[in-house]
Picture 1 (tube, rainbow, N blue to C red):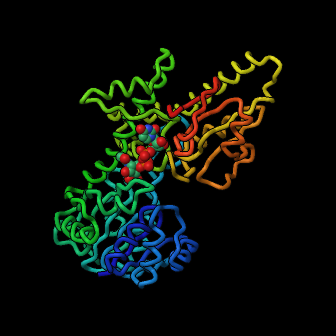
Picture 2: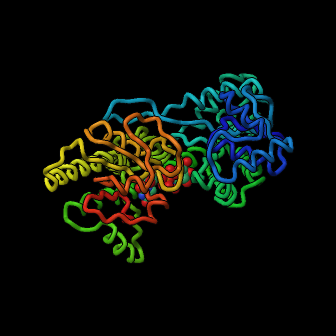
Picture 3: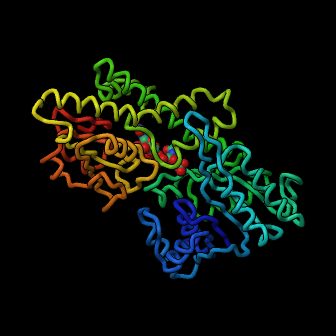
Length: 416
Ligand code: SAJ
């Protein structure tokens, strides 16, 4: 049995390598020639612990190859991005399914009777049925399960990925999988396939429920973080330490509040709840509000920095605003990773750098350089010797080792 994985990014490549490590023949497909060339050399184009070894072994032993045009296979796993379309501020973003459409169009010519097509990309409810319709449109000679049910020529299912960046290789194996076939037969075929490497349980449902389950997991986390973020703003007003407050409340056996921060970043939690809101805008009130609460946190942090600057000038009347150095601790979207995309920390640092007349420096121990003109990367030592206002944005382990107890500290993660 040959497995083809369409989209060799943060999800597709580890999944492809995992099948290959279990001695399945895997054909990885990606539109990026650079990604394909890198993988065929046994190397990786993304950062993820342990993935390099897995890929290099898979390529060396001949189980994994990458190509830019799909080839025939028995199962196709689609792991392409599902971003949202650009929209104006205040509008509800709409999901962009064009990558799924393009993947369906690309694999359609090589599909044959008996094949299985699995959508792994996080998708709005209905996307899997939509993908099956696209496939049916391109291959009128084959039958698909949304028309004929159990006896279709090609089986189609949604099996959402749920792995945590930074822990992908272990979570792929250990986590339970939600398997949502358009028909029962589709689910059975998918369970069989995932059992190749999944040690967690493969739990069967239908495609729409599987889509909603994945969105619900991330929306649940977003709502809970929004609760913590709202508490942090309330506590600031009431002169209460939110960190102490949450640790006290969490001593209750049925309370488990998450941690506030500078906002919610990453490519999933800040995106997926919109897929629910855009489908049912009149019903998804809490989920919508939580998104707004989390999205507004960066500008609240920026306001705190402005207040600190004003206080600093008050206490140091001989200085002007140009003399004040502000340092941002951490730019990544969460602790101990190097990923700066969709990062509230980077967003905050950029706003400060654009609006502050003095110098803005940043410490990001996980990257060597950043392409932002007006922010200079410095070391912790340099920052300690010249910073006037310290803004902690990410709880990287390096920052937990130091303790800054200056009067001008804005600690969005409560580690100091
Ligand atoms: N954050 C807080 N407070 C917290 C926890 C997180 O502010 O108490 C922030 C982080 O700093 C970060 C953001 O939330 O900016 C998201 O981080 P995360 O660690 O919660 O999640 P991701 O985006 O790295 O991965 C999530 C995971 N989903 C869940 O935990 C429900 C992962 O399992 C999913 O596979 C992934 O989304 C995905 O691809 O959908």
